[in-house]
Image 1 (cartoon, chains in turn green, red):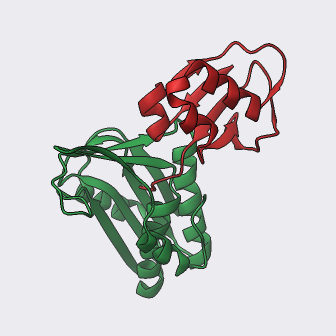
Image 2 (image 1 turned 90 degrees about the vertical axis):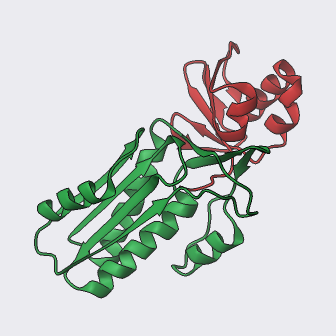
Length: 157
Length: 80
């Protein structure tokens, strides 16, 4: 079984990470994955020149590991991978890759969805959007809270 | 003691502050001392929803902080 959570400070190539994960997993009948990309526009529609993901030197990675572990237990996964950026990120770059391997496709799909929802609200990050109009620190939205509630979980205050 | 700040708190106060407070103090004492030293950010420090964390463990305002401890103030998370 392969369960990996990594925090990276520089751009990464999601398909290369996924290919390596596929080589390492065993006893899987399905793998589902999601790649989160940095958007070029804010929710308000204004252009974004970049994101900055501030992180804690230890708690950020442990929060991602806890989410991977939770998915593994909840969905009986045979493998899981999360690669997450931190620091300065340009529009179009991958912020996160989440992949889940399971015996059957339904568990893999649901696990990838679950991991992404939890990462969006619970991972220990502080996100700043930079644009021509200035910079803004972002907090979880009602949509993020609603997504998390699908799994009977609530956002940390 | 070593103070670590993140997110919007780090933007206004910097990542790290070394605070020389004699004897054990509570988290609330540390907040008040930071607000005294950095009055331009006092509102953010004292009234903020930033959760205190001593040596990587979440804690309360009444928790005791020793001079050798590291205390982090974590603003509301944005998630990834």
